[in-house]
Length: 338
Image 1 (cartoon, rainbow, N blue to C red):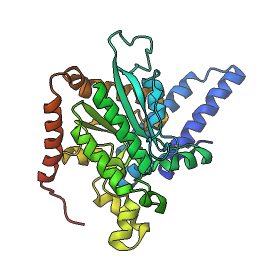
Image 2: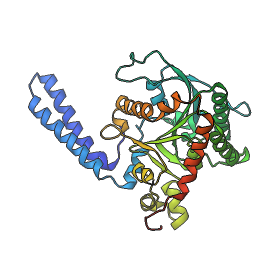
Image 3: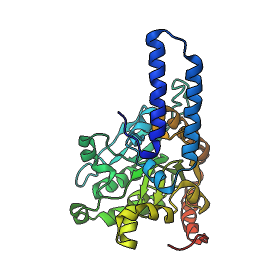
Image 4: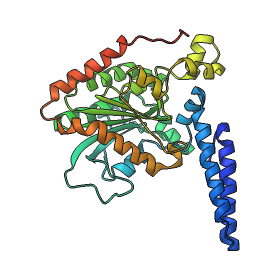
């Protein structure tokens, strides 16, 4: 059975009843259309009511949902011609960072055959987590090591030389803090990745699709256009680590999540992001194709104009990106201190 959180339990139970009724109707050949329709409306209403009153901590949980789509899921349905490129040419290939070349515009999952003939090569980069235990170990739970960020830098430099726009997908609890990563220059690799993004003269877009944690996320997030999915989070630190530092008690993560202002609505108000990408009713994990289509629509709306103007606006793109991030510090915070 698919994993779910406590606040999803009433929805899951009602959906189970709906599924049982459909199977009974099919097996017995009985017309339960009226009952099924009534139950479908109840499920829809319950989802609306539940998700309208989610707490900040529940939104954090949703961003970590075990069934939530990862970077590769979106790449596969939006960019089926994706060609993966691996290795940092120095140490190894970090599977926590996915990178490669694809063609713009993205495919419409509902009508994949209607893509159009005018296609532009783009570079895709993103954090990649794993589903099962083996994949999680291979991908290091989406926490990149220095070689991951150096791979990203190598591919960004390739995109710069080839004049390819860049799209990044952010989904990490943070960069890997292990001793081996520190020995190989973790903080330097993150800083160099941030620096590399600010030097790019090609248009860049970043999309937070799950967790956007600390410098590990920012290393792929210094873009001209920064978007967040509706139930993603983006913060300088995880709620658990924040609670450990402030109150010496990681169990106060729920309290920390309320103070961090890490939801898309808060970050849009503070000028950290440019737009919120809506998700299917109940979250992206409930309908991958619809979630992908909503991402496609947002990217075309927010990023396509930059792609079309990239040949004449290289220096302006660089200056605009730098100015965008400098302005973030000018925003007056009107909420109470922690």
